[in-house]
Length: 328
Image (cartoon, rainbow, N blue to C red):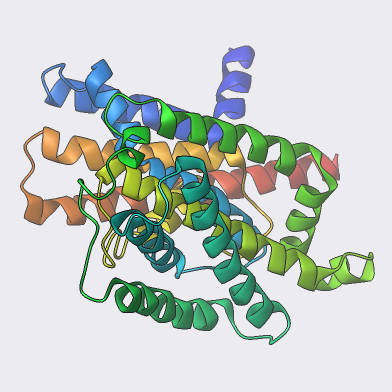
């Protein structure tokens, strides 16, 4: 009995373990409601492919949120970078897949650098700075498009990288998550990000260049948003200035579901992945079980709030357990 209690405490005393339990329960419920048609190879493939952009950008948002910041300009950066490489193909200026991804990444990094400098050096609140960036980068996407858009015929060849059945998007996701897991868990840079979010003043006193860390995390966020712009063009075989409009909230929700604190200093790559996966499964499951579209956002919001509340309760239990160990 003691061992069972101990095992239960371990499971409920970890945000990631709690989320795994919720994911398993969700999958069981959805599978039953869908008549056993949910967990098919085709559906699983679509879940990852259709949510690859959210999963990829969630890694950048993790870094930003860990520093107690936020970036709501990410899908505008995505649109600007994606529109740029779409037009390069439309007018036959460039067709090389690697170079197109590189250009999109550089554009995103430049946008992130500007955001980071304004926030770190200009001491502008992240929400204000990135709100301005949200309008600027989206506006630039519309300006360079000049009422044009790149269709499937324009991006043929490049779209092969992300077409249904291609492993391209999965390779990018796997590499990104492995790299971020290593960086955040075992490198000095990762520890400094956590330190800045936990207590910026203490981090400064200990010799950490806080402004540099903040600038770098927004550059990383911009880099991943730029890559997501290229990936979006490849997956959906089109480039439009309004692509992924409003989806930045999905990225933030995925991180929060995964236990990332918006106050900074708390969160993990594993939790972020689980949060993004949970959100993707919910988005796929609601229409599959026959729920009308007018109810989907309402149910999705309720589910997100319930999971976040569970994360809060789990964190309080963990903090309480830590205090008890210190007293002993």
